[in-house]
Length: 536
Image 1 (cartoon, rainbow, N blue to C red):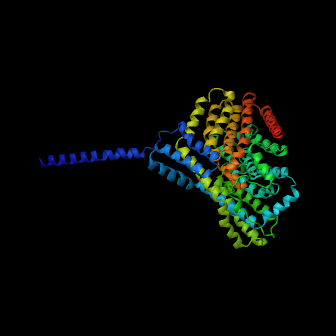
Image 2: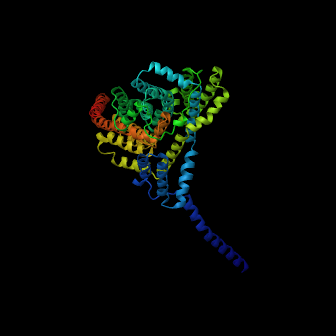
Image 3: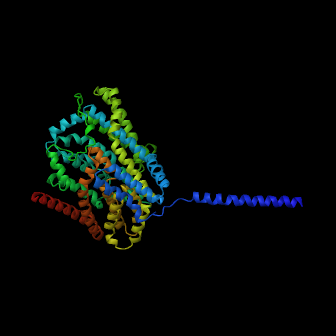
């Protein structure tokens, strides 16, 4: 009897323990299940970046506009609960963005580049180059064309392009009264648009990585003649400069620059950072040498991360490189070599070089803040499934209107990159869909991939929250909202001409016909703008 009672007690105890554990197991299962917000992969996922962009253009204040967009994203994600909103915004958003290895590498690169620019200024290299340029570049047109030419030459990476071209050409354009807004446009328009048509660049590496099951680099090269936005942007820049056909807000900035006001607006965030350069020992070599060393070191850094020194070929190493780590390593070694070079030339003592570290960091505080907020806004958008929503929309409508699909993909890429501020993310969403849809028609696949790349670059070019746009503002030392508002009409016009050209390309399926039509349309638009300027 006692044995039976003993067994019954064990059975009851086990049953009670099991009953107590069941809720815990259910709770643990619920905890393990990934949280999916109610607005996930819906139209609402695109509202936060759209609100941030509209606010920035209306208020002319970028920090608060970005933060409002971030908060809206947090509220949508949490289902309007206070605690989850705050933890998502700060823990998943800001802290998550700043703890991302790629983002940290870009920030370190930014700071080191700011320090290098400060050192070049203190050593007198920028002033010497300005004096040399004033003797050899005689006009505003020459200063702007030189900026375009340098931007086209530095095609390795868009971040590197923006900050390097800005630091080199700013003294030259200032001397010829070119507005900071126009300089920022020229820098931005020769950053991503040039990188996306350069086979040896970090952008080519990103694109080839998304073309699965195909020879990514070969497709990238064959897509270059169809990358109408990039090619027509170069036509637009040269045409605007040679024909003096500026219009819209940019015309106002340029007219004020001719009167001596390079900024137009009262807000001049970088004006206090400009110091008089009293070092007369410096020469042009003190600007050229650090820039060349920086280019060489960054190329070596990028191919190093791609396994070049472990047996990979140069192109293969570039395709597999980590731009963030490569640029960070390259800028660090360029910094060390420049310190030694200046010390040997006795134009900058070691102590003076060290004094440039906090000054260079301070010069980059504004772009770092904007970048951090932009990355956080992108994290909010990602957590709401904006990429899933857009991919679903494109995929559902991709089987019809085949000849018009390149133009449609271009417009979708524009909108997605504009709203999220990232072209690489747009590549990752749209290119796999394009490859799948056009797997049976290689020519149309190449045209559609180029339309995806062009649309992504266009949206990135227009977006106030794009890191490349932010870098261009920093490189030109221009108010960020001024840069966006003056550049937007130019980018929209090129986008419109590109869209028409993609419609033509979808039917003729050859760049021999479609590209010349696009160029002629672009020139015709510039002629109309110039004539309207005369009438005004």
